[in-house]
Length: 430
Image 1 (cartoon, rainbow, N blue to C red):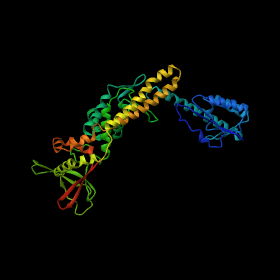
Image 2 (cartoon, rainbow, N blue to C red):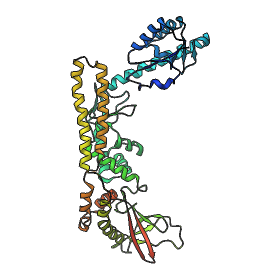
Image 3 (cartoon, helix red, strand yellow):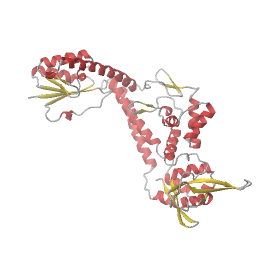
Image 4 (spheres, rainbow, N blue to C red):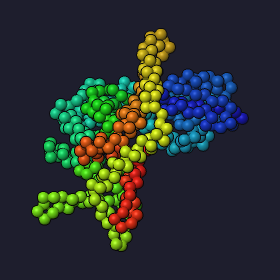
């Protein structure tokens, strides 16, 4: 008994399956990618020496139309070959007429969907925008998104506001107050992270192609937005834009409760005192409040003392070396893209293969560019030396200190030793 198998894949839609999926009991595997030369060879071989069984995943792999599928089924079965579709309820010897109509309808529907997907895939190779309405801030042009001058400034101002204050909810409120544009917090987050506003296209397969249209957010701004979002995700809710630099960072080690900044004024309201107190202290009596200014002073002192040591122990690879490596990978792929027209002119690649190769190379370049943008903007070891000087911190405003604290600090722990006696432990992010 002889068993053969046939596999067909469309390079625009499918990944290439392994011939070994059929197992060892299959004697021969015919496999096509794009065109069906191997299927024609299979039919020719069957005319000389027909096998007992032909295994196929789905009947529509035999042709692009229902007529082609029907003709090849009839041709093979007339040669005495029993066809078994492993992913459909079809076996030549057991097929019932009632089941045949259902299978043919299924094949017709699958091919209709596949033609739509092929059309979208061809547009993807040409880096045309995906189907659907253009994102807010853009309108559709002939072959790319075009900036809408009436709405793009709204998106730009929203992103600038987030970069300035680091608060997503605050930027959403600002947008409504300034422009009367109401969006949800989740929509605001999508605006901040959308590849489209960064001049890139993202398709349904999650692949990103860079530099396809004019950007509203620059690469530098996009990298800073990503860092701010990562930093804010580690903080308690509603502390991202708090006016005090230590807000959301301080924890009482004794009761394991986050500490909030409270303000107390004198009766004439001429003087103000700031304290840190535990939010949900389960201990009785509750942990006492601590002077905010005193904790701030000790935090700066501890950073100057511990940060250079912590960075020195990290044994980080050189940021310049990583940037150079990623840049070399990008340059290598750009060089290959530049050679594709020549290979097409020489007949080595046809137009569709060249477009597919160009698309995949551009997707790889985009992934390297995303990694490059995610690298720290400065050398951490050099920065550690700068911020370990006490005068650096004293010259900053609270908002500026808040920015730098959250770049380095994961948590500030208050370790209570005796009544009115405590010390600080700093947990760095790295």
